[in-house]
Length: 353
Image: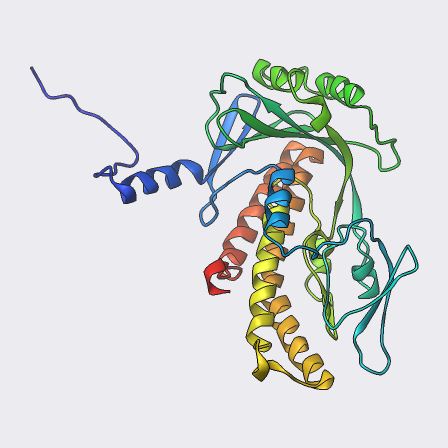
């Protein structure tokens, strides 16, 4: 009997911790586009994909904060700088006044802090997005790849959270002044109509989704070209998260980019502001040190968020583009990835904090 010959793209010898981890990593760092039965698979290279429920992540983060750190029902409506100390003064909708030595605006796409920094307001994209979750009681058969399917003026994305829960979104062309629906059942009905030409598994996923998880929003984004020279800090005030780099959901990187912001910002501040008795300093010295920290933070984050925002912008543009324009967009994305990839790497090791 002759020996059997096998052919594989990658072979890993050894099934210990390293071998299994390497195999798992190679299976997770892929991005797949499907269009009219044509598949394009690209490597995510440096980034492995993980999908989490926003509510689970927020709950976990909040539970690890000291009691009393979070104030609920407090909306900041205005910010100004104290003319004597140069520290920020915040005004809440209930009439309260809050004085802070450092102010970090993580207040989303309509950020009051971003406005006080005179950042350009986010633009409204002519694309609306439906987001939802579908739970499979007996488990699903999807792998961990980020799958995106493109139709005529419609894009569908899918990424499993675990063996039973899947996150998905649908992006479509939509006039900027169109009415945003809030009724979950109506959102589902409209979404199914948009996806009628898509594969059965996609339609089934939307049909059996958790209706309470559905949301329909207009896509907002901060234009990548505005980020090159924007002043993201002033004095002891800066922004992070969507307030800094709101982008479309096409890469699924908005939340993770916010976590990166948090790690880099905390590290930069810790390096300039030593804790303990030796850390005591005058207001003038504190303003100087915090200014240095925020300058480092913005410098480290700028290229990274420009890259992500550009990729998200170009990916979203594929929905609205004709076939030949799509090819130009794909070429532009490749250039951005190659040019910015080596420049945008930061050390996001939480242990360094």
